[in-house]
Length: 348
Ligand code: AN7
Image (cartoon, rainbow, N blue to C red):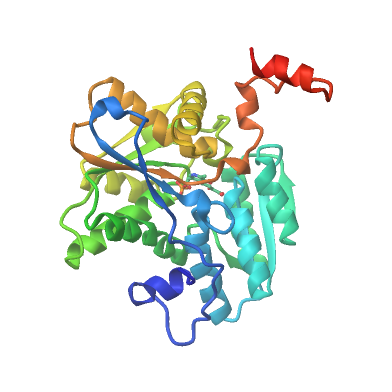
């Protein structure tokens, strides 16, 4: 479809005739049936491929609306803190809109692809000592003192736009699924999905709310522990967040839908990344693979109901963090450029 979120779901979004119809053709991402991963469970499993968005993550759904509304309000520029994907998305939409963008990043903890994108799109990138939670405080201060628009998910338009993924899933399946597993960092996306599913049910477009299962990395699991984590640590740097801004909304989402929060280890995340890639041909970044890790864990406990229908939300593209598989896969074999040498390797 040659339109983005504002065109496709404008009637459900808080826009006016004066809101610029900004678009990089975000949304309308594939919902792919998984046929091999967890087939023994007898569940009908889908992956929502959010890595197919223009900048390679789900952030584009909300960013397009946040930047369009900022333009409508006459903004000078946008600012955000980010573990990477928000910065790439903000930088892209700011570029498309012709406004300035500044991004505050935790130094040394942003995956290469994301940093490269923010720079390529012309953002002013500032790496700070400290984690995402500290960067967000400075981003709030920058917005207040420099008179630019904050486009982290505390900006309400971000979560509004992110509801669109839940709508697409219902549209594609002709109803909401039974369950949905989603990674949780700052806890905005799970809250947006909940609001999206609630809206569809209230307006008669679906008949149920899916059980929402929010997944965190063991070293950065404030929602699972029920308290902030001062020094979050995980190789899934996208969700390396210790004090989620939308914690209350996310807790409500899980309670309302009879869902749960759970934690998976970095090793489980990497195992799941390899399985998704080798069994399904899908390459997602580590934070996204936490969903598959959680699914496999629940399946192992016999908790995935046969015949149930569920969705793994793969929030970001594997190419964002191309180094991740290098942690567990051998280097390719290098040989001289002769057929004999190549044949020897291929026939092993
Ligand atoms: C791939 O980019 O917080 O729970 O600054 O990049 O809504 O925060 C990214 C978060 C999941 C968690 N998957 O979503 C940022 C940032 C990926 C992500 C999450 C993020 P939220």
